[in-house]
Length: 397
Image 1 (tube, rainbow, N blue to C red):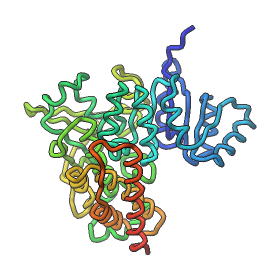
Image 2 (image 1 turned 90 degrees about the vertical axis):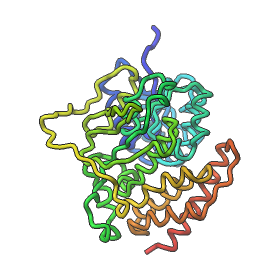
Image 3 (image 1 turned 30 degrees about the horizontal axis):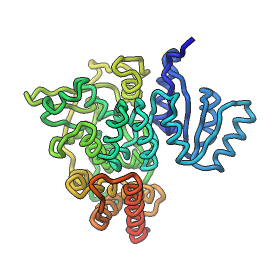
């Protein structure tokens, strides 16, 4: 009998997006089959997932982790084949038996497997910001050339996508601008003069969303929104001035499309990433996500406010990078990854994150051709990281 299930590769399976994806998949055993899972270093968690889902393949960052995973799976009698290294991620993303790829690896490391899935024409569920922030035109060209179906998983971009017609040719004629909503994170009302004293634990305590530590810090600085502005520019083929940001602390409206006739289309729901994941998995159909229903009788108010540049100085860097030379957005992303890692390690302060990002963008000037290749972008990424690390060392406590 022919199998009609969608075969899924989930890259970043042990992270919050990966585990939420598996939660949605578990609700629809007749529709989905887990073909491959990957993780960076959480070997025990990946072992448990492999035993639960019995994928054909599992991949980890290096051979040491692979040996550990093979040993644990071997003890349990699992037949899952274990691979390691960046090439394995690309192989599993582009595997001919795979129908859909959840790209949930955090950071620039996710760019190469995203490109591989795009070139192979997969249904690509994109939760990796860096594919667009770093890859930009290169990535979108790969999507078009490979005939891939690109479905955004960030709640904001999924909201915009859901407000637009299926025919992408209609988008430009319909959109005046889009509005990305932001929760404002844990420091929306905090005195800007006290932000230098913020600890990693405080920055990771998001009031609405359950996320990993890196993206939680990005939410606290609103650098996540800066990166989402860059993503939106490529996903929806918009000019930077067509992208706006508003703080909406309830996280009920996930983003809005303002049409040329001034109608405003919005997507609403509880703050649960399983909703955009379910949209991506089933589009154009709708399936049960496991999220709670939105109860309008329990909503006292939906409020909006402009971002405060004193609390969130990094947000403006998105438009500055988009106005800069090609590759400037890749520099911003690399600097931010290094700065956030340094903050989480206790080497720099919270407000130093912006200092590192702004200084790196100013110092590292991209020199790319009209159509940069992947190796050029990755070399630029490394050059920006090296410069950011220098700035971190100068600020280190």
